[in-house]
Length: 366
Image 1 (cartoon, rainbow, N blue to C red):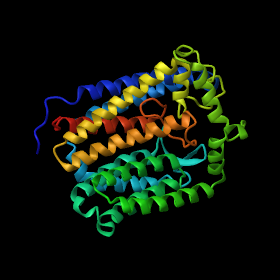
Image 2: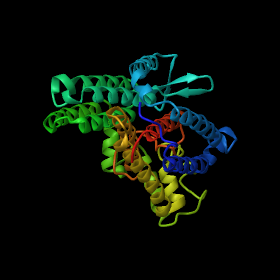
Image 3: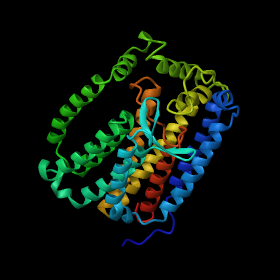
Image 4: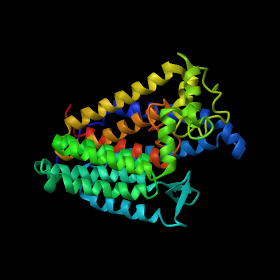
């Protein structure tokens, strides 16, 4: 086995904690009014997010000290457990419905979202598959098809909830890994056409998805319905200007933008901290992704490279989709902003993924 470095990537740790600290501050700022109104406790969401962050950080440092090739050996078991959870979440009485999706399993006073952990398990398994079968990937039947069948089986399970946003991130991450592994462009062109047709079918099969598309193209056509969130998000970003209205001074969090501490937290951040604050957050994400890419390139084996690449791709795709939705460049999908948005499963998953990256960095040469 490769010799460990004396220390993990310190810059990656600092970037992660910087984003996490900004997220904790913004969760409180964005949710205080709603939490006071609903729970008579302005710190309700902030305290829970701090608890999630604490659990996530402990998990991150724990995972950081587990040799990353352990995930290769256990990837089948982990993915199998995630598939079982994806089935269980669909069973009434076990799965919990929120915002029209049966995506959560209750555990005491808290709940977990199996689809979030499926993303990381799929990355670990696919990294193993690609590293062991890289020469077969250019072959559609022998290499590409088995990988895609597994990915779209998981995607189908997630869509039964339904959760298009999480499914899209997982598929995008896996396709990026397969492409880098050496899949042919001609195969991707054909699959791209089929994918667009399937995506169109998914949209047409559910009226609310059609409304999301039409509201994305022209949100003012239905300003009090399907276009409401996008309009209110833009109303938050616009007045922020260069320096923002000031921390805690958002107007849109006063029951205009629904649950601003989750998917649309970046809109509140841009309103309060302005273009400068928003740009700083994007710069932190860019630096974090840069460190991740360097770790992937410096990993001592193919499995480590593909594993790191998958984690970096997952974070990058999720950030791009979330920012695209908040700024009105993409339809509303229900994707959280990594490390910033309120949510236990998402935050814990992201911090665990950073823990895996940190362990790879202890072996990498860069």
